Image (cartoon, rainbow, N blue to C red; front, side, top):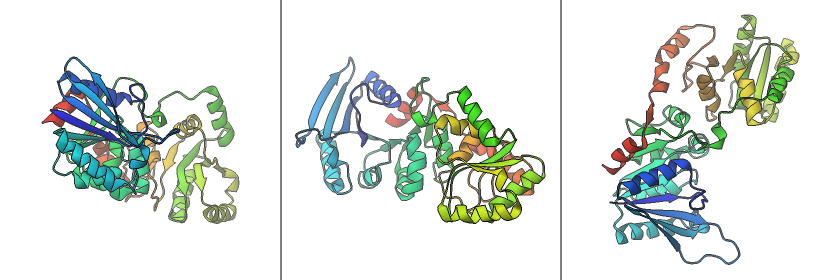
Length: 358
């Protein structure tokens, strides 16, 4: 058995390979499966015109690493790269394909479309789930429809994508050692400075918060109605938006807040450090997601994971695990259905490899 692993990411062998890929490669080699990796090499000084190969022998199998010029992993050179991969698959009799990451728009989807004759699987990273869904959802849709397996080292990746794409039973949360696979999702405790920042922004009062970007697509009137409703019910005294607001939308929102006499009860943070963001969200009485939001939904997933009450409109694709009043029929229904977000359980590397090699 021979496996082809392809990535458009810039790695250095061996220390630069993410831990999830290291464990998968180790699992392949322990099963006497030979692995060929295709990786980009950025130009430095003289351009690299020909592929360069490195070989790593193990007791059972062999790892071949082939470096291609970074320029090959682009829209303009996509056909050339696909032709090279097709030739390589035939020449070396490769049986399976595993692609790491889908953020390089068009790269993975082109492989998925062109190489349908070979079992194709993908490792999805944290940024794949949120960045690709926001910017190139058509690419992500083709990958999720075509891949034999979808493997993720982070449950939030699969929980998010499961709201928008059809997985059936092909997606696996890979059980990993306690290492940082995706730096954006590191779970460190807020430091004292972050607690002070929370107190400064909230003015020492209980608050609700919104996250991400508020823009013309967001129904500001509906959002204000829900914020005001929670305040009138005594849930909070202040509204903090942890993120950014488009200039014209901010002008419109400020005018509404002035008319309502609430301007002093509103705070806008702008882009903040990850630790400050986490500290603010975890300190909120509720996280409110507006109608019309088209961002990645990351704030909703994190609110669920951190057990912060979540308020969403009935049509929002991510359901609250813990909701705050008002307790309308739609919220009762959402609460009863929220177990769907928990269906992904940790799967060992051995179990994933068994499925991959079937």
